[in-house]
Amino acid sequence: MINLTKPDETATIDLSKGSSDIVVRAQWVDNGDGDDGNDDLDLRCSILHPGDKMYLVDGEYRGSLQEPPFAHHHGDVQSASVDMPGEEVITVARDIAKRAGGPVALCFSVYSALNNGAVSVASLRPQMKMSCGNDEVVCSFDFNQGPGANNPNIYTYVIGYAIVTEDEVILAPSGKTSKPGQEETPWIFWKNDSIDIDIVGPAVFKGAQTKHSEKYNKQANISYRFVNVPATPKKKGLLGGLFG
Image (cartoon, rainbow, N blue to C red):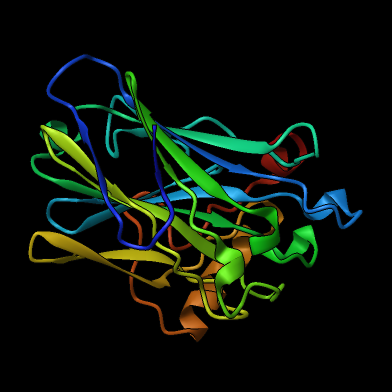
């Protein structure tokens, strides 16, 4: 196992042997503040395909291994305890670069929704583990070292990013966080053969808050959009409202 603790410190996973898909686990712990309601983080992955097609995979837009974006979120987990860390999982197809037609960039982040209650995300000590076959890399940057460590109004923490080719995965921690009060999502930009991450993507709310995404993005003048996330959520009819 390789443990990466510094931003942009890299490790490489060889994909040329074996047949296992890539499994990413985001883990966090109970911070001991006595409020179990705020121990809820959401694992998100921004995925940049060739042609600047950006996808989002999370607990709401779970994706598929069989079709774009060739990644699948295994479902929302809403709690963590002292004895049982919270964990959400995303599987990425081993041959995602081949299927997509070129190198694919991925940005993994955790998000704390405002309606979960005020919490310093850094106090939940989020980290990610990427495994493929017998190879495992951990990104465990300590966000409590940052200037916003105790700020409950910072909602998004980038825990790791990767470039996947047909032969390998190059993985690194990040340490980036959103600005206080900012609901934007991480967005990926190619920079020659490397990538740059900036938290300027559209806000994507879930559940009952979904309807507020469009208004937020218009007010913030955000023009970026994920291919698989509708700008305007579908309105439910009467039966959908009763049974959806």
